[in-house]
Structures are given as C-alpha cells and as structure tokens.
Length: 88
Image (cartoon, rainbow, N blue to C red):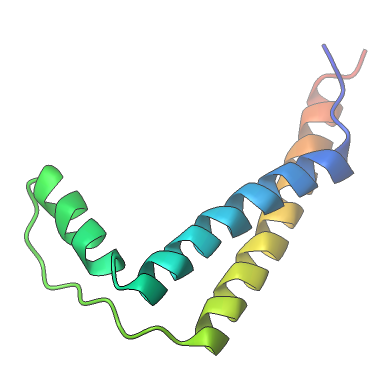
C-alpha cells in the first residue's frame, strides 16, 4: 500500500477546507449566501430560521485562516495514521 506524505496531505486538505470557506465568504460578501442556505434547507425538506449576517472582513479572514490550519493538521494526522496502519 502506498505511503502518504503527511505534509502534502495536510496541504491538500488545508487548501480544500480553506478554499471552501473562502467561497462561502465570497458568497456572503456578494449577498448570495442566504439564497444558498434557503435552497439547501428547502432541498432537504427542512424549515428553520437561519439568517446570514452581513459580511465582516475580520470574521471572514479568521474563518478562512483557521479552517486552513485545522485542515492542514487534520490531513497531516490522517496521513500519519494511514502510514502507521499500512506499514510494509
């Protein structure tokens, strides 16, 4: 079984997680996020009152940075566990 490079796995997961949240921040900034939330709830046949707050650059930057870091750490740990479980 192939071994994973923990740093590359961490980078891949970190970029994916941070990128997804960057897209969310852009949707909020353009005012499109509420429509997306409403659609997702409708498609899942759910009804609740989630309201997307106005865009806040500090909150958006914090969200993207933290999710990138957490994604990196999660990917790194996953690769280390994978490698340990699949030793030759």
